[in-house]
Image 1 (cartoon, rainbow, N blue to C red):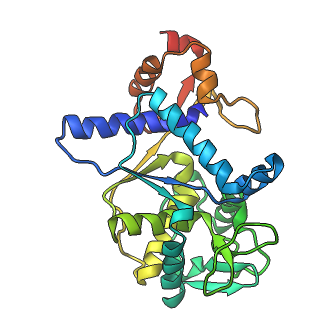
Image 2: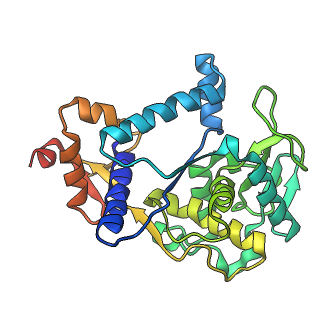
Length: 288
């Protein structure tokens, strides 16, 4: 949707500025989630294999990015191509005592990090344990479970369900949790550290928080720094209201451009606002 378009255009502008004016060489990796509950459910509705649907939507996504003038990533990291890396990363976490198993899969033991967990939570208004648990389930339904030690614990590996794609692991057949994907794929691509990690502000907590937790757990280093620089782009609102599929006020990129919005005008619109600012979209502002 247009909120994601704003994120990717903004990050493209930052990348081009760093390369053009800063003289930097940027290795820009983009993670592609091609295994999750929503993909499996939608593929079942359409009578497709989940990975078939994922590849189709991925092609549409990159076509939209090209239309918006975004340079392609240096690396495209697909979860289905890095399951072995995920299994290895989960294994490191379990070995260090930060992961535990139930009949539903493998979970990250958040309490093991103590006060080191929750750096991004304050900014999202989720500083209490109850608020953090609610935010987790809102963003990551896969992390619902009956046998968890703490409501904030999140899924590292989900046990296989009948009719769903699965891969072998030391904990039985299953598939990766959401948060472990980026941790495992970036380690495979870049090693143990990143220079910069970016995404929409909605990802700060719990997703990016949990990525930090996984890195710390895999190394038994609650105070360590995986990535020193985080860039979170702000919300895009429509007439002052946050874009949301549940509110039925979201606009897809193709609808946006099909309504006559010039891609270059949209890029200028994004560039006129600070990357982290909440921006209100309207046709009048685009025309201006």
